[in-house]
Amino acid sequence: MATESLVLPEVATRRAIRRADNQRSTRLLLGSSTTARTLAMLALVLMTVVWLLPFVWAIITSFKTETDAASAATLWPASGWSLQAYINVLTKGDLPVWMLNSVITAVLVTVITLVVSAMAGYAFSRTMFRGRRIAFAITVASIMVPGQILIVPLFQQMLTFRMVDTYAGIILPQVVAPVMVFILKKFFDAIPQELLDAARVDGAGPWRTFSTIVVPLSKSILVAVAIFTFISAWNNFLWPFIVVSDSSLMTIPVGIATVTETYGLQYARTMASALLAALPLLVVFMLFQRQIVRGVATTGLGGQ
Amino acid sequence: MSATTSDATAATPSSAPSAGRKDLRRSLRDAERRAEQLHSGRSGYWFILPFAVVFLVFLVWPIIYGIWMSLTDRTLIGTSPGFVGLANFIEAFGDAQVWQTLWQTVLFTLGSTIPLILVAMVMALLVFTGLPGQWLWRFAFFASFLLPVAVVTQIWAWMYQPDLGLFNTWLGALGIDPVGWLTDPNWAMIAIIAATVWWTVGFNFLLYLAALQAIPEHLYEAAAIDGAGAWRRLFSITIPQLGRTTWLVLALQLLASLKVFDQIYLLTAGGPNGSTRSILLYIYDTGFVNYRLGYASAISYIFFALIVILSLTRFFGGRKEA
Image 1 (tube, one colour):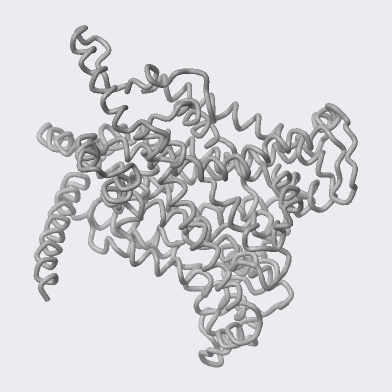
Image 2 (tube, one colour):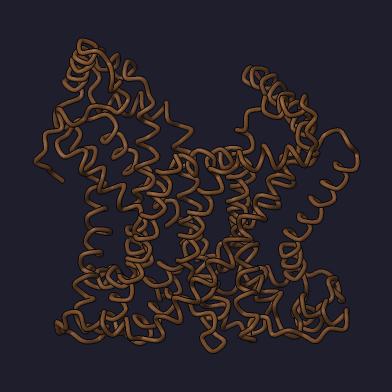
């Protein structure tokens, strides 16, 4: 209760500010003419319909019976709505296993990337080890290397390490994120040195300074990095596709793409799997919309 | 990870005034040295160690190993690769497939980048007008970016379906003959580009939205006082102010589009008749279908060199602009 009463007025003010901002930008960009406003609104609605249409089409198909889905392309199901596709997908087949694999690998990729990159970012930003500058230059230069061109030697390496068809094989090559190190280093650079010195004077070692001062101060950027790492790990197709051939180890994108072909022409079932695979990220987006929007702004523009 | 240069003097932060007076500079240097003493010691190595390990093992080593592979005739099955020198590279430059897939990659890149910039900008401008329903617009334009590529291709393959698909049904209702969206060489690349724009425009849209929010308001207020109309404000203030973002989006988009693989592989696998095959698909086919790992590595590095050259031009171009 106490926290609610503290939070609610803040939310209300923020909303009021946002509403005022919106009104101002409406006035400034569109002017006060009703025609301009109406035209803009129409364009907006039209584009939204176009962009949501594939979703709607997929959702409706997933609730059709297989015969309806395969017999006619009319939007509405002829013989009523059906949950059969979802039941089939969740009880028969590997979809739940792939979902679990995706959760395990994406979470581990995110956690390891975050820890490794934050520590490296701190080292580059706030410690003076020998070779720091050249190591940082190499890290930044490596941002240019497109991971896709490394699939051939990486696969060979996985064969040598016996990591083909293992979680480690899926996860480890994905945790190297020089761009995240760069973004975090730039953020850490902006933390006032006095804060760290104060902690130092109080007897905190570098580990304590890092974990009790730097990390809490950087929560916003750490969340942004975590969200983006999670999204790209969840959606990564090429690498898991190459390193895994065992269906019980596949992540969702790989499983759907390679195994559903064997379902043949089961459209309702295919659409149901596709939507279930997309669901977790849509939920993440709804929960973290603000952080994602801000993250794109800071990380996307921070790199220029 | 060690260097011969001494960082004690080299690590002067760029924020130090270059034209400052001597004593100021000396006191700054003293402060630096103090801070350095506070944070010196070997802790930096421990902090960098985990990253250094994964970086060396999973990035640097494959790069070096790949160069070695590109100089051999290694296959996936063969045990002892023979050193062939630059033969793979010479073969690649004379390989019509390399040039064709590279050209198709460029076509895809141009065809996707232009709409991905224009559509994103229009979306952001419309949303930024502050019309009611903000949450819905943002969700509609960004949500597809969150979908795994396999989901995107399933949905679009279903809509492109020749007999049952949404598009051909609508065309049929208008009395137009069905189009082989993914099977007609004239349409396949366009169909892939359309799906790609739908899928990825959301990221650029958010970049533009953030940039719009950063435009100083007094510019509009001044223009409004001067009596500039809505179009005038759009073309004289808003779009010029988005210039930096447009360059950024252009650069990011070019580099991303050149690396196209997933959606093409899943929608057409490069067909019909190889008309949508991108260079990465050719690398994949060469390495993992035909098992010519050495040759696939060589093509990879030629492609990599092109990307590096492009990035460097962008880097120098960006310097000039800034």
